[in-house]
Length: 460
Image (cartoon, rainbow, N blue to C red; front, side, top):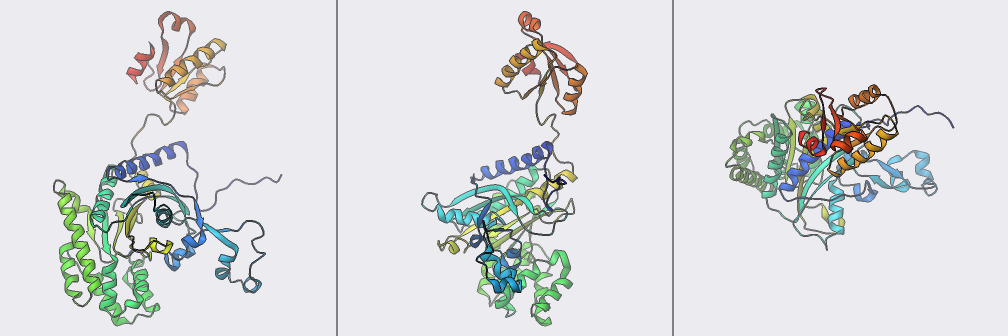
């Protein structure tokens, strides 16, 4: 067998025990917050039928979906003319019928439709699973990464949007972040801008360009809009909407005046104002939390399925892209045959949050991520007694390792130190028979003492 140099696929990572421990810390904080707001957990498969995913994320999103080749001779039924012409885009559905999921929202919509007879509406769920995108890997951007989604379908109440803002604020504060922004906008407002400048037919082109504002600035956005067929006069009008300054009330009043002839734009303003009204009511005792919330007209969220409020979260403590986002998607389940079911949800970018917490040293310090006790093993008698004590300790909920072979004390102590095991127990048949005790060494302080199981449990 040919030797293969071990390597990782670009955009993927291995995780050590410590890294898994830290990631689980993030997941557990998020799950705890989600459950507080009445959400329950589901899971969906890692891959879906290709037709389930394509056409839902826009042109750019579709290109980033990892397609899975059909089993067997996948080229046998492929169009020979397209093969000769190397028309890979047109060949995709001939040679592939499945794909790794791009996000958790579309699979969730599919799940809702397939289980419509058994779920209670409104249906509130959270989901923490990996997703895959064929993107160019870079800092904070991976091809395989976890999403932490929380969604509700079956209600158009804007209380849900306000709750998602609160979920973001509470979760990020509990993770130790102090300076972040939960940005809020509404796709109806963007539609209102397009309608006001007589470019409703180019709404998608406009939002795709605006969505890149943070990365390329308005000069870059302007160039892209020109490339997409907008004349300079229209671009100047778009700029006047995006560059208006003030607090959320000032911005909403400005838009209200501009949208006198746009019903959809006015509806968007009304919805955003309602969300802030709910937030003011819900935060009566925590008004300071409103400082994390920002109404941002430049927020576009390029995904085609958003129809109402949209969200994006960024931290100002570390140079990083968005660490969360989402929005309302009134028409999503309709593509699977269940029309008129509205939904809204947000996602936490767990991998980016991990990088932020690591850089800011915000992970809690844990004494041990594995065993708390190592039981010694010097000879047959020691081994037999250690195995007995190990099971007694495990029965009391203590995480225990027994050193697997007879060895010198120094080697066993070095093993405990290298694994950061805080206690080493030396067992002796005589000590246990006479006093029901064993010798315990605290590896942090170096202190030793004879203790019963109860005394040891009390000292941990």
